[in-house]
Image (spheres, rainbow, N blue to C red):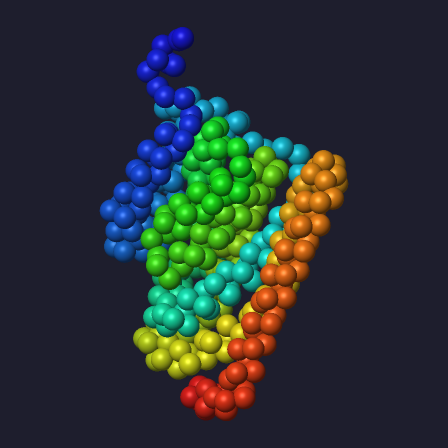
Length: 317
């Protein structure tokens, strides 16, 4: 045993837990305060902080950077599989968020405040900070160091994805976005477990944040922050209906995610897993899709049948 091995622990779940705890403390007492007082510059500090924590932690425990951030040849099937996974995840998070906002309409106000937060900078700079930096900095820490340490002992990709989902949701320190961000974190962890190529989870994170930021930049011009509470009051009655509509639209999400997962695995791995597992996955995706479709139709039928739809539309005017 050399001196380095005797002084520092090997990469593993213990190292991951320690770094998780440290980052959560920093997120609560450091990063959130920086964003509160410094705005977008605070967000820059947060991203750089995540990058430094990940790299320094890897140096301390002796985790090889190439092992932590594996970059391999980009394959067409994996590239489009990642985009399909993102498309399905987007629909899922919309359904999750609408369900949550139906119970807690105050989340709409919170989203309006986030839009106003990023609109203080020029569009190009805001897109870079919100889309490019998290795809590199947050991924280096979360799917890089923390997930790699967990994977040294935990071999189940679904358990790894679940652990990373919980932590990613907690990291964002937002009750209204916890479930949505946790779901996205779990999907990105699954992509890395499946491909072992760090490029794809960076691509997923970048596309997701870019889409959200472009939408927020457009909405910032039509939704003033001082009217956020009025909007929340008006939309509180519409949200259940919107939830029903998105359930119908989002019924394709399980199929998109299944297709994306199949592309990520490739033909050879699907054959290795066997037809039985593939059939079970297809049936499960179809059942979930049907459940979403039926749920959405029932919700919309209820509001139409009870005559509440006309009242909701009048309330928006």
